[in-house]
Length: 281
Ligand SMILES: Nc1ncnc2c1ncn2[C@@H]1O[C@H](COP(=O)(O)OP(=O)(O)OP(=O)(O)O)[C@@H](O)[C@H]1O
Ligand SMILES: [Mg+2]
Image (cartoon, rainbow, N blue to C red):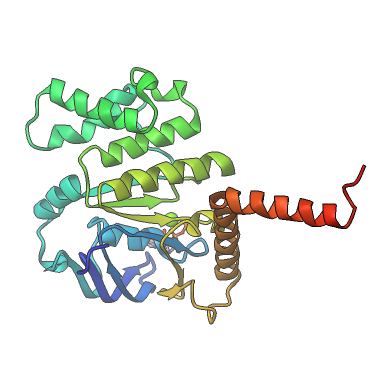
């Protein structure tokens, strides 16, 4: 993890005006420091403002008040053209519904973001796209159209597209929403490994406590603010579910990491049983 945050939010609010003229305060004071190399999981009930927050982090929108610093620059002062440039170069988005271009092959979908980058020739772009597809185990699907791919494969293509320009941060909004539980966990593991291998940061928005439990830091968005999930004082249902899922996966990791210990315990148990004559024929 980097020692300096590269995105900082202080008292960030986002208020929208509804058609009748009423104001809706979606975010009411977000404080957050985001470091390189971490995986932040954000959970929260529907309509609490998770996508609104992600749009701010992805420079697709600006705060109503408060301070949002992108690598030390106040986003309010960044022009739309500069924001678009930063988005293309440093930010990868993964959406719930994949958002792949239906008439284009997996390879063309992954190569597409490079069209807007530094003018690389088509061979270089395709080579790079194939490399990333291969990292995600999709080298054999490069020339298939999206509708020929399974949901998990389509989401991996969407991940490859988010990673192809080696972003500094990947923002994933419910990336497993359209997948079954097992496929979802598998896809998140791949996404996390690929992002952390780049030394980049992953922010995952999810409804699934198991997925939030995989993050290095889980936060709950409620009442327009972020609340740490690790803190026992957070007694919401979802915080408790994430903590339980984390404890569960830690237990499984310990079991998986120490087969020697369980084998030696089993043999100690057997010899103790022998001594008691339990195993005697
Ligand atoms: N531009 C807008 N104008 C009016 N209302 C908006 C606007 N953007 C968001 N909202 C409202 O703000 C609230 C938060 O929206 P947001 O999409 O951020 O929620 P969310 O937490 O991502 O929900 P979900 O889990 O269902 O995706 C919702 O009630 C939404 O209808
Ligand atoms: Mg949303």
